[in-house]
Image (cartoon, helix red, strand yellow):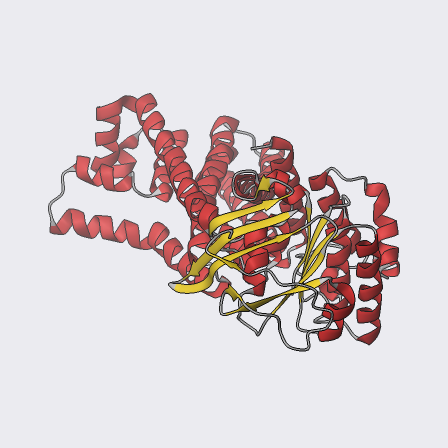
Length: 276
Length: 225
């Protein structure tokens, strides 16, 4: 695989994302919501005296866990499916490029576009909070990194959907269903299973490892506090089993795996796909 | 220059190509004719490596599956329906020029050649079908590839566009370019090609009656004779 060609494809993807109204709207929403949460946090800080970054980070974690998967699943899903549908992909693949270069370039380009939107949103928010309230900037930095990791994982799932379903309409439906599952249904399902089957904390912990949003939630909470009792028996199990540093390693590795596995599965399909 | 041997293609359980074999020599211009759905476009897609087929296809000695980059570096492709995404015409050309390692200095000349010089900075999505087709021809000519695959290139062109396209293709042919042209239009086939390969239900068949200057027909099923 030639890195220079991959980067060319990625750069084109970034340009197209920057021109996309849908992506622009999503980035603007992210910025506005981040700022709104920060301002609300600051208003609370003036009343309660809590440090600015901590409160803002806690608020933003919830925004990230809901908003980022929604945007990246859709964005990744629409990428290759849209080009397969309008046949522009055949124009690209008719050039002296390999499918690996195109696949990697498109993924990296979309990730860079999402990363830029996240950094713009969090950069603005961070500057505002830093200037007006101060506080522990470390947790905020961890949140930014965590957001990028979660975006990479859910973008990979979106890319897999895109290659597997090959149609914008089907991908949008599937992306929404996956988002609902990851963000809401999985939580409720885990709780339901835990109650109905009297699952051990270790089993619940294993279930949580199957969901990148849960992984990001625990990692984000760890960045804010080492009191994992806020996560209940599952958090305590993780801490007792692995220690805080080990838990970070396990969850980080799970997030990386959740990025690599769908990406590899998507490429396996894309490599052999008939391109109209 | 183009060497296809026993091409077989099945998509969703449907046999699209069934043992297609042919050769196109350097500097030759060959037409693929046949009814809609006969397999003309699928043959071109095999040569481009866009579909998973069995058999062997080589462009200038390079296997399109094992050496896709080398094979496609020698190919220019004008699809039936050109699509470019949300880019300006000149950006689209610049992008492909960089992919092909071609001199971007040739882009204005190519735009003039296809009659799009005045539209270089416009978004391709605002172009008519004919303009997009002409842009696709300019893209195909980037890097000066020795082989051109043209899939119904005049399908969405008006009379003037067809005339311009015919003039460009005639010039390319005179320059010694190897051309493989899928077309329904008899006058196009008659004036722009040396011989005809008729495709019928995924196989090469006999020459279409009245298909113009049919000089020869190759018919090799299931490999070379």
